[in-house]
Image 1: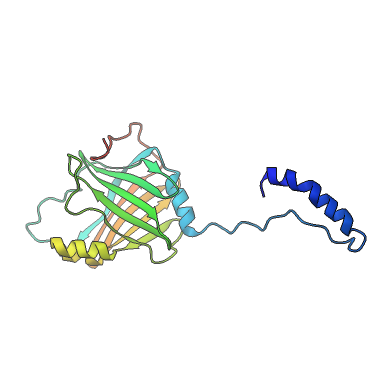
Image 2 (image 1 turned 180 degrees about the vertical axis):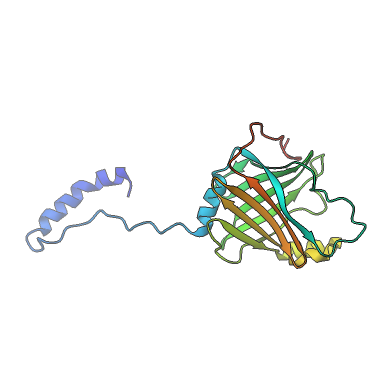
Length: 217
């Protein structure tokens, strides 16, 4: 009940109470509202991410295992490069966090809400801003998770995409995102035989924000 509504309703409530006092002196109308339901783990997780908006943090690889990588796979694109996450935008419905790998500004993590939970997508762009062939893959939460950890199993759109471009090992991907306010933000890709995890130090926000991701200039 808003303050304006309380002010308008008060005279009517008082008059009604006086009329009823003779027959029911112990009863009085209550203006109390029922307590708000507690925030869900996903609501708290969302708020924790939004609390980082406008800040950027450097990360380091804490796990990078691939049991099935071909011998001629070449150098890892993440090893030995500066890794930075920038929490650029947050609203009630969407969070965008570009993930910069050295000078490569092609990646943005996109969190959105669904009717049943949360969704994580990977927006991949070329330097000219056009979509990469493999983009907007990800998944939806299947469980409530916790305020500090959410898991996103691969969705059907992504499975179809991976199969179409020959990335068949990715059809069992699960992405796990963690946020410990004031401590760390973690992003992890997991599947049988593969784990890639980056941990970002939230205690040391960068003094200078990175450039805009490709496609957002």
